[in-house]
Image (cartoon, rainbow, N blue to C red; front, side, top):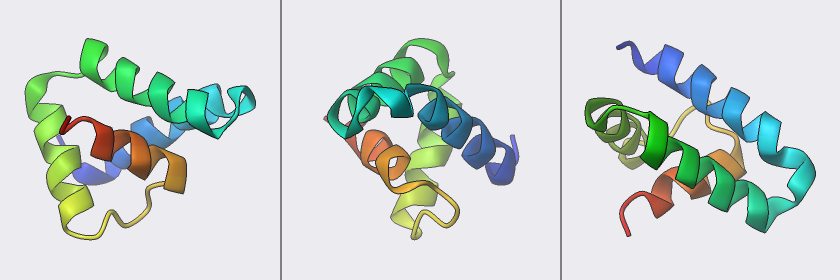
Length: 69
């Protein structure tokens, strides 16, 4: 999948959770990505974050980083 599409999808998920406050948003996005994204999609978004994470909303970038742990 193209990384631009993954960034858009991740940011949309982040906007959905944004009303819950930053900590809950980060946890909610990370949980959603773990539960519903294919492992290949998660690997791609992690690689994108490692390359600078262009286009990711800050709380989404933090959620992606949580996928490591």
